[in-house]
Image 1 (cartoon, rainbow, N blue to C red):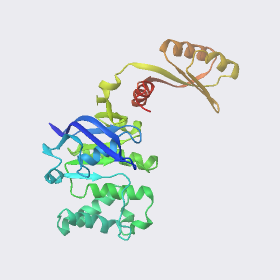
Image 2: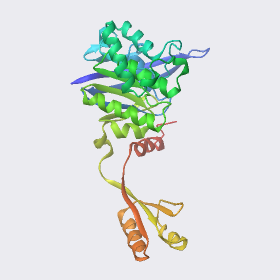
Image 3: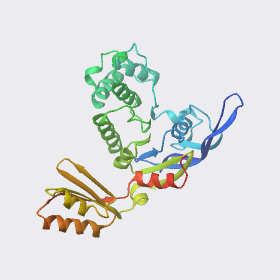
Image 4: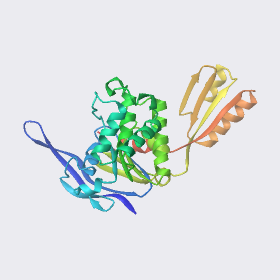
Length: 310
């Protein structure tokens, strides 16, 4: 069952003194199934936020239609079970984190006892239980992002839309958010999130759509888009000298020295096998041999080379 669906969704803005037309989103068709994590990915300025603003009713589409749980997004009822984290959220800085969550719970009509219980649980869940009674003005950027995530979940929504949820987070924070998104799927919720960080999407998404210059250039399940074919092999070696390294790197697509270690990448397994045998013959050590498969980054670079990303 499609929880989020769009057909021909488009948005044209008029900018500048001459009111020049700018097509931010161009006929986007999406279908997000229940209980999935759907990644909406692409570079900055590709049309991700404009699409999300149309889905959440913040701006009206120029053309096309969209539905959430089979309710048109023009109907406020479609947002009754929707949690939303916008990009670059502005907060009431004089409120504490707990007061901020309580305020948003009141806006959603949640009773006081439930609001207080949910606020405590969510502060713990997003990793800032110690900051519940601190004013938001004292929060770091990462803490603000976390309390924003808590706000999106205060009503225990069935559908969660997150615009750049990993933005401003350090590697640990990004891992925490990825784990949170996975846990939401485990609870049966549908998560739609945008990101320009392709690696994050590849790790956790069921489906992705790649948007470039307002157009969807690829969409589908990760395995279907990337396939399972090996596109290269990475070798990390130790215990060899510089002359041998010079010999081994012939034919490599990448060859670098990392202290006592040597990293080599090859496009085909036969070349990697030759280097492996020569290393063992010279009494060197193989620290790792990793087959490299196609990634979302590879897919995006292919589109860039076609001229789809200006």
